[in-house]
Length: 354
Ligand code: FPP
Ligand code: MG
Image 1 (tube, rainbow, N blue to C red):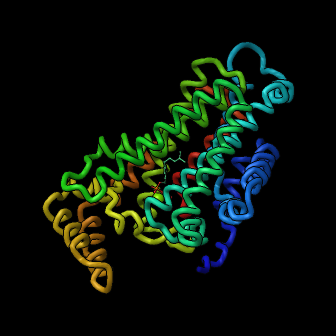
Image 2 (image 1 turned 90 degrees about the vertical axis):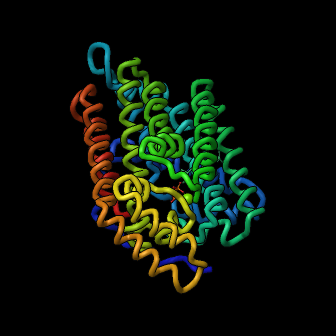
């Protein structure tokens, strides 16, 4: 199975690189460690994880952790500390924690692609599509084991955060399976709680753990946790919107994967709340059509119903609103680096097309 051509580097990539600027060297170290740990296994596991390593994605979680550790080192309590000294002191723990979180993320994506029977990720055939369920399961376990080892190197605080996250990820994913295609769809509140468990908690914990390891007090840690949760929610909402409005050559994922899998992503949840009868009827027609030629027309009908219901507009509004609230959380930090970088990162993620 072939992947798509590599997407060209765009202005959003440059903005992301600029947001990551102060921790670029550390992020490269984490990326290198992830690659060598993923490759440290049998040839089969090395090959089965190779695509995720050669296409590292946005690396948002380790970047948040690293930037928040800087925020921790430069916030609260008296004169601005010597950043270099503080960063050096906690550097190894921070790097191990960021590596653990990125490996955990890759493990969860590998397993997620099995659950979603998804053929494409980052523009490349998924491990599941290329190697089948058994190898994809083991590849995810392999990454998970390496993640756990890194978390233990980073210390007890990281291990506690890591375990809490795994529980939430699994819980979120199980709830998503439970409600997929269910007669009674989730409402907006249930959706948000699910999106928080499967995505936003990871962003929140990346920020909070980074801040703590960097030496932040409880006020800064709390603000950064809330910042992470809000941009994580915005991220998942934007992801749901991209399922409908994104170009697969940019997102690197199948078009309309959520709706084809019976997932209640936010545009459908909002559409059902705004125009229950018409949207439910269009949705039922999609589900009742057997895979084949009738599906694209039914999906187009559903898209028109969602458009008419204002569901896409509501989703986009939610992305903007949560990003606005997230930016307000940063007001506690002193101006400059890394506040400006977290600010920019939030804005780039909210406006992303990939
Ligand atoms: C992607 O969501 C998937 C997740 C955010 C979490 C997946 C979690 C698990 C499979 C359980 C935990 C696994 C381990 C190894 C601890 P999505 O399907 O909405 O996004 P996508 O469009 O990128 O696939
Ligand atoms: Mg998925």
